[in-house]
Image (cartoon, rainbow, N blue to C red; front, side):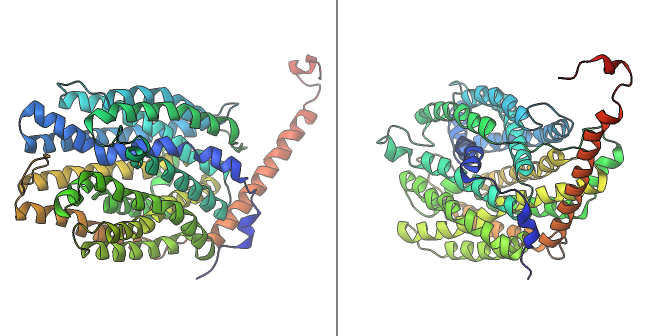
Length: 484
């Protein structure tokens, strides 16, 4: 194993306050992601069960709505990514997109968390489309923006580690709402969802302002030009990116199968009351506060792809231990959840940092900045993976007779099907994701040489542009313009 080269540390190091200001956008973003992934399916299943009078139909209807929107939204990511790569303004390339996506999110959050009493599948599909459009714009621009402000191999691990760690604050705060509000606000309860929506909506302008006004966006000498077909194909055929996209899909599918089933599993299979089920998420998500910087530091010593492989094996072990833990044992289960969350915290952080490195590789090869498109590809894997998990596991639960209602009584067969979906599938999927990095070539040494070449090219372009006005002085109509 070789450590990342010292030359990679030559890139400008951002101050901690600047990184925190930039990463603070993850606080409301993590709250929203937790609500959408864990609580919204159960929230809508209950409401739609009342409307249709059939809980099984509610599960399949909610799964169908989410899967439909996710698959449609995949095309949005590509268009948004391409649009960002062609954008160049005085305020930067990515933060203007980030600011533009905010109003879309505010409206969609309000509509999704304030559904009418006679909510229908159509209503859910329409507003999920709006919501995921806003999420695509803001998440893609923020991720690509992070790659622009941190150009060094190790500095990217640091920035993405901070982003993931700060986001944990949002998730844990949401889970602590029952304690902080003395039971007035409880995630998952129908009458609390509106209040949670307003909390997220009010936080977003504050954290967005911190990012927009305090985080720089490193300018590039590269000017956006109309991309040709071979430029797009260079992204889809780049060996490093192909590995990342495939691996990311499996790393999303693994933990993704547990998210919509989480409340069902721990409430019905493990016997925890709903109040304790929510609190069990705290050690799982809170582990990211420790896991993100730890994995980032390990990656600086051993490389990102090797660290990611180790994390997948550790996740499989932790998930196996969670399987054999006794029911209704809160303390020991909380420790197990911390272990699983600690391992899973490496996945997103390291993949996103590696995508930024691939962006530099493609920029050197083609001369075009395709960072937005690259992040659109990995965001697509998240959405596609999420749509698959929901679309598969919910019908399976319905097929084995599982009933999601509060007072429902489930058979042993139904509970066993729930356990199989929650525990075994993630292990297999995550290990496949880790196996994708055998033979991965874009390590710290390779990236350091890429950055040196890019910096030399930028320096040469800067010198040429500075010399150009001198060589053209007094020539043409512009010579009449007074020099100030």
